[in-house]
Length: 141
Image (cartoon, rainbow, N blue to C red; front, side, top):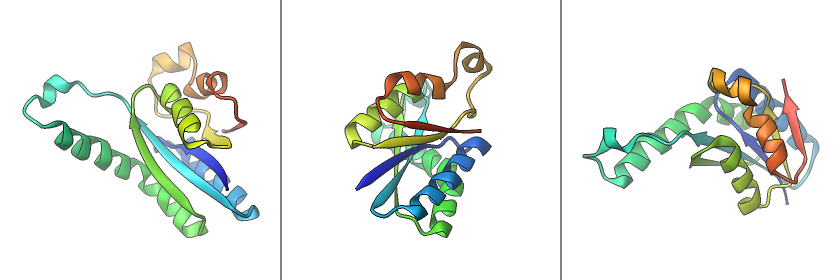
């Protein structure tokens, strides 16, 4: 089975990447799309009274579901098979780690996400991902 990773942060370009990936998946057989949301690490001091499980569920899972809702609707409408995953950490590193762990065959991602102004100056997540992975990366404007 061919696995295509689509990192998604809820931005317009990420959703265009999801739409493109859906069209690619419709043209192929035996393909699985993987939606991935990478959340920035939180300051744990703010949540000192919460258990790790509460933090993980309430913040990571709910935030991922909220961000990925539009992407899941696109894929449901297209009728293509997909899985959803969420990770916490540096987006480019987590995307590369996901590709390695899940043995993804390629990545389709947007070129401009919802990152900070600093990331646009230093280099985008997409640029970093290209340097970290050994699979083809399709960038969507």
